[in-house]
Length: 249
Image (cartoon, rainbow, N blue to C red; front, side):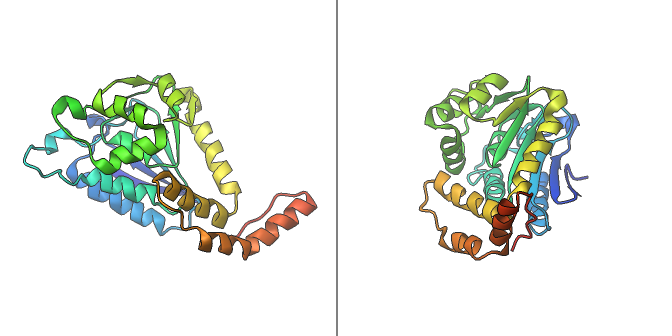
């Protein structure tokens, strides 16, 4: 049975890693299921995606190390490929982190646009302690999000970071009590869905390019917003002092 589930509530999709008996670790077979869930979600008429783990003890333990051998089979880390897919997801993404973050799950959360964590969580990547050189793309992703020095400490030193330190370094956008995490996620969803879809989704893509050190290719996205019915609606709503009703076109 797959440890990955996809659910949709109105215009928000949720992908859950659901294997609490194994600390929400991902077997090799789960990686394909996770990729498939993201592909399916991208084709749905949604406005946002939430990534989370079942329960409130562990967000995810990353890849199940019992599935990893030392024969070179992970020279191209499949989890990093899924993080790339998540980073390029066409709508805003939010990581709901109610428990511990371990190994490759650190990168999955970093691939999301926003991260909301509960008090008491912590983060640890054991790569250097077991002889793994983490994927270069994953290291670049971390450095672009939280800075090169924090990335050194997480991956080279294998330091354990608590919730407050994660908030200070920018790994978390919000740190909230565990009983308030769902409300905080709902509020974040409300913010990202209040904007015009072409504007929000377009700037997500442009900021992703900037964050990865690329020259942004935003001309078409900018032009589409200027030519959109949603811009006319937004300006009309501003004049009329009411909330806009965007259609995504």
